[in-house]
Length: 133
Image 1 (cartoon, one colour):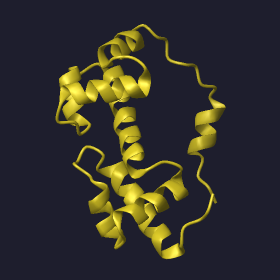
Image 2: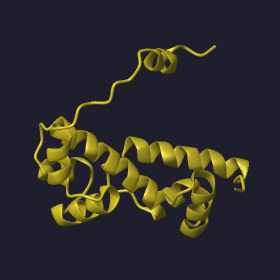
Image 3: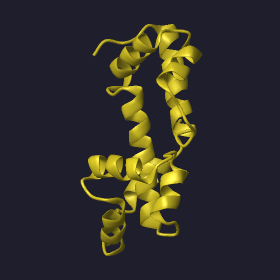
Image 4: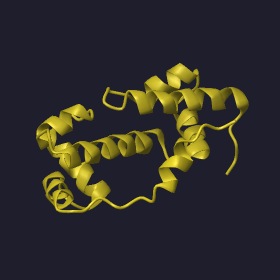
């Protein structure tokens, strides 16, 4: 995997951070590329080279991860989850969710209700939350 040029790498990190923060907002590759002062095609190639997936794939991954968490929580309807993670249409959300997880949002929620949470040994949270020097 080729490393992108240093100035672009900073912009790529900023773009990834923006996607992480604003995943529910309407984000486009063109807008992200404008922020990096490069063409959309060049931005997409650099993003994929740096992070292993296109900006759109990365955005969908963030949205689906958040949707799964909200569905497991069970406090919102599927439609509310759809809107909360940035989809305008329940149909497109359900299609993308099924493509990502292999099951519908309702089936995922139902299955997660009956599933025991995995036990995590106490040393793991301590290891991951320990301050680094």
